[in-house]
Image (tube, rainbow, N blue to C red; front, side):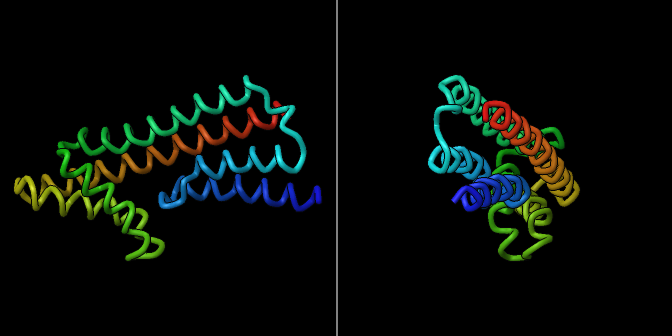
Length: 159
């Protein structure tokens, strides 16, 4: 039973990391699932109130970093709210339309199309917004990996 427990816990952590680059997977939910599985298979005693407080703070930081990176990326390159929304929509649907490359192409195209439709400032402006969206997505993914790694280290230290 121990082996099955660890396999499920590690699988949850791996899926959490996959979710950093495949946004349809809620990475933080799978990280928390790993902790809960540990408690169910082994014991919750090591996972004290201090552990949960630290993890909740990192969850808040993760959500904040994720939203801020994408919005700042688009706005830094002159994009508007339409570009941010288009980027988000492209990020969600891109992987389904273009399975692997859609993760990168989706947010770019979403921002470009939204800027072209809403602002009508021209292709150059829309492409700049798309590039900002792409940079925001990559920055967000790097921030998620760092935060998830810190969360995992905290888990290992408590266990």
